[in-house]
Length: 543
Image 1 (cartoon, one colour):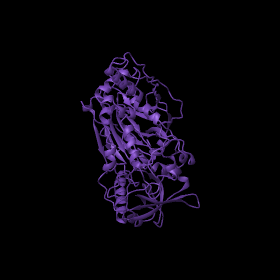
Image 2 (image 1 turned 90 degrees about the horizontal axis):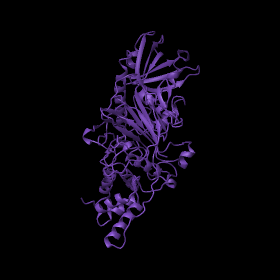
Image 3 (image 1 turned 180 degrees about the vertical axis):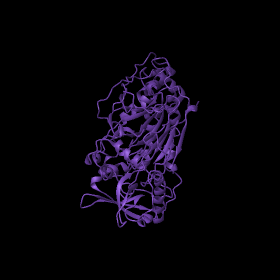
Image 4 (image 1 turned 135 degrees about the vertical axis):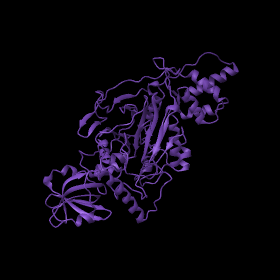
């Protein structure tokens, strides 16, 4: 079979259980007989190697040339290959006794600063067998099931006019209020204004304003399609903890009693749309896994290339055989002009060259891996959310392993497990607005709990998170996912909230000068590995 392209060579090496350096692939592609050159490399590579290096190729080509001219004979010493075994860190495996987590009222949590349980994962034998004699990657692609929902790529309707924003927020209100109508006896704002004083009343609306009064109470103004109405939360009602969680523009239900003059609603209870406390979760009918990563940031001087290589090397081992899916939650590249003086921290200054380099790194992943990608705020798409998937030019550059490229956010059903993928820009806003105990960079999964509670991935409008006006609000969480996967904040955190596993997967970029200036200490080189049959998770460290 001719191997006329780098991609074909990478695929051929992957089928034999090898990864490869980019220069090694280029040398093989330029050989007179690439097929024979690959055979020679396989012969010359050391028994414990997982990666074909440039030195391996040069030795193999020199041996072939020497053999062809019959000017030399004998064997060539094999260059040593470093041990690339990852550190294993157990994540939140609920009710198993193996979880390295702390318990809170919200659910199970994980933190990379906790003492890890460590296990060594040795390299796989190069004959394709594991230490028990089984095959390293015994995969049957016909058993795979992957479906994408809520992908708005190619369906954008907004023109940026005022009427477009009205449609977006009307759609948000109608869908989220529908989740609350079964819990309260809702009346529209104009109807409540006509009710007699002292009546019991309940209203569902978007939060138009929330502020403290001089007496220490809280005034919440709700807006629905008929108008606005104020609700007063008295400080002695025991609702301060709930008020602390309220964000502008989110949907909220208030129950209480009207004042004598019917001009205000004294709140007795507040309700978020929230997700059910218990539900039947999905699960694969076989043992199969997905790697959840984000924020690769290729093109940055701080891209941790060595850690990425250790990760992709591990993916070629028998231990990683069940890892048939790779879900990337945005920021494939570092981008250009994203923050002040970013050009001083770039290793590659051209955005297209960044994506070309990212594609080369993606080739290191086993060729039979199913890959799903969404964009992030560093990627070359519009900043306003929802973000459509990449344009055709960038898709052609990243056409590796037939990756599924969808919008941010999107829901991916992987063998019966629904994964909500969202890059996570709104987490900055949630962390900034809410008390530290409810949302922080050190525990990003708690900020994700808030988004699940509000049933919206970016509830607050007009702040750091840009929202694009569309006929449909694609940021509403209609269906409850089994897994909520985000990135953006470069911190590793995971836990369960009402049976939903929330995972922020860290990054592949060491601390930049800009991050240092804003006190971000990134968790780089981690790969959460999700069991799709049990929804248990193991976090592997490659730095």
